Length: 187
Image (cartoon, rainbow, N blue to C red):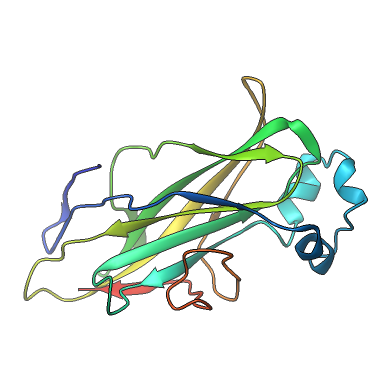
C-alpha cells in the first residue's frame, strides 16, 4: 500500500494498487496487430518495439458505480521474441494542475516495476488506484503513465513510456468491458 501525502491542497489521496494482472496476447491478436506468429520467433530491436501498435497505455477503469473514485491503468507491450528476456511495467497516476496546465505525479516516489512475463510474445498488465478526494473540492483530471522495460538478465535492453490514450482493448480488468480512455475526472 502506498500512502500519498496531499500534493495539492484540494487533493488528498490514498493510492492503493488494487490489482496487477498480466495477460499474454494470443497469436491471433499478434496477427491482428500486424505481426505474424512466425515473426514472433525473431528478436525485435528497440525501434521495432517503440513503434509497435502493441505498445500503449489506457485508463480502463474510471469510477464505475461499483468502484467509486477508482482509476485503473492498463498497459500493453510487444514481445521482443526472446523467451529469455523479461518484460516489466510500472504505473504512475498524474493529475492536471489547473493553474498551470501541467501534469503532476500524484506520488513523489518512483513506482516499482512489476514483471509481466517472458518477452516471447506481447503481454498486458494493469493496476487500479483508489483515491480519496477532499469533500467539497473541485474534481481533478487524472491520467496514467506506464513505463515499459525489456530486460535480459540484469540489463535493460529497451525502455519506453506512454501516457494513457483512448481506443485500446484491455484483455482483463476493464469496467465496463470495452472501456478505454485517456483521462478520468475524480472528485
